Image (cartoon, rainbow, N blue to C red; front, side, top):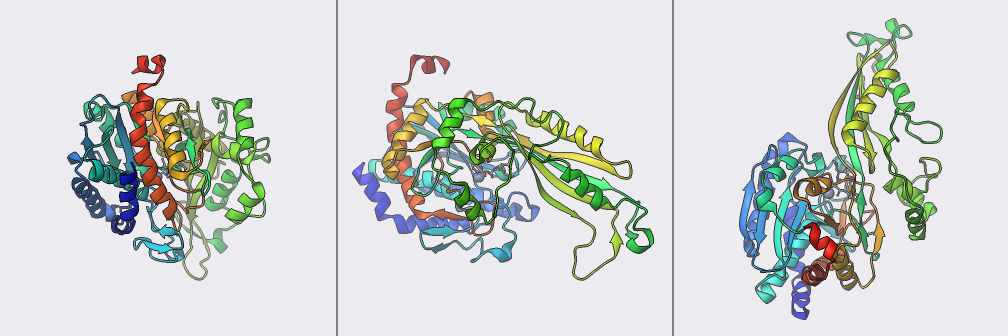
Length: 467
Ligand code: BES
Ligand code: ZN
């Protein structure tokens, strides 16, 4: 172990240089212009895997961007980890707000700034380097590993369900490990045991049959932008509750024990408000900030457009207005059902003066993972060794749609072993990966791979029976 950890320390600079190279590829999954970059990024990862002595390396097609697969399966009698991550990233815009270019990874202080540095290329790379260090120093891994790195997580993993269902044999494993979430705070490692799901909608409000002169027609025709704003404003009541009929029907209530556990976590509303730059926080009445973020469903308008927004003034009463509206969902809501409820509600509240269209873009279910499994116990022990502190248990507000599908299709539980930070600017300008978390993450993974077999061996009869 000393030797392996020593290898990590001795190769820090090279690891960083390699990660910078990976981060220079603009693998933005949502934009068709970047299709060649997606392929290039998949190839970069595949060729890097080759240099680590991983085997059976393949770039496999899906209905969308390809996945990268590799394995190492020579640890006889030891558990098999399915390591999932994603090489796609969110768009970089607004690009002018980046301090240094999003695809030229730059170190400032103890952080590495680049799109994808934390979400999720940097975290995928943490595992690759852990594998490298172990292989270089001991010639073999203490566990079996299958890696599945996809290119469509940021756009809802829509083609991955089918891929997983069609490759059950290839992906057959004992547990899933995902590093695509965060630690509770800097220096405070954590195990995440729940993610919210999502239902993403786009709405279109149609008014007159063409753009109209706002002087000649204004006052006689309902402006679609105004109608849309009125409708959006009505989606929350004065208590911050979502007004979509039936929205809360299937929400699993928080238990007293969980509420108490959240209250024990180090959190300050004042600090949180200051960190995000608002004078006052907002949310559903009757719930704390952590409860609102982790265990309550929400509705956000992600974007709104219509009419004229170029330079100077144009007096126009536009024909159309649009908005993107997404809902984060929690157990036991269903993404499809929430989408239907939203659609019915939005159509119902539309005034007769306009016509609305509602489209479902994508969705995924909320996940709760076991906290007493052998995988989680091994992760707790590894985090303690990697970061010198016992991890906290936390939930997250973000979504990783495939987690629930891994359980449904492959019967596998997931361990969420995140190395990001809450203020890392994911999906925003100046995204960064904290370098202590990068190197600490590599060491944690080295420990995790070594500890898992022991915890796995000792897992309860009940858990053994399930598999
Ligand atoms: N890494 C995030 C998920 C995440 C965010 C986990 C915050 C924990 C905390 C992931 O890449 C992501 O952003 N997912 C999308 C999924 C969506 C497009 C279906 C999300 O949450 O918006
Ligand atoms: Zn991610």
